[in-house]
Image (cartoon, rainbow, N blue to C red; front, top):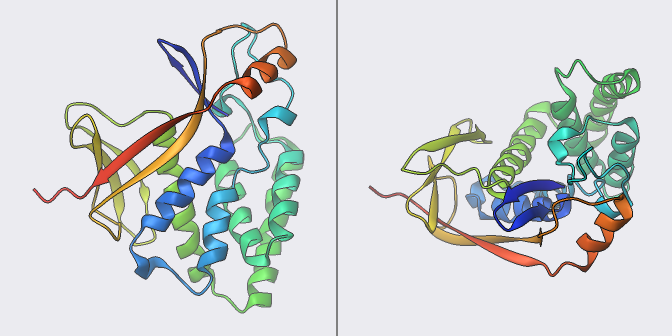
Length: 244
């Protein structure tokens, strides 16, 4: 889960809500980015974090009783296996994109356990087999994965409220167009991306979140009950092309 501390309490965005927002962003991209496997690509973007199920997890709280943000967790072997099992049972192509994303998340992390490191190495060989099976090039896979990673990055920036004030911009990532993009606020209600990668010159996206006024919980069960019973709220985000 994505956890933000606010004046009103903990703002919590589930990993699945974050994935749904990423898919909405992907769907807004220039249509020329779409390949014949567009539906699979879109599903991979939407479901890349579906193995993260908050209400099924343990150790959801810090030592002070606050909710644990996803960034505080290390990659776990069981999560990797669950992610790939779910993906492969949808399609081989979704499994390829999911495998690429797990590699990205684990790459260069010296703290990974040996079973995670072994899993990532095994996935390299598995991707080569899947590419041959589907008669796809590594370049095409990289193109589609760049879209997934870019939309994941922008969705995280939005869910963590990290757009910058006073006209400053923040780096998103390098997209499938090969360009580095930046997020910038045009005003208090509108954001833009430069260079502009989207089909429409103005559009809205949104995500749901939970606001918990209680800052500390005695147990995972107490937190889960509060989280499950909390009324979801919606944040709508407007994007507009900067024509200045």
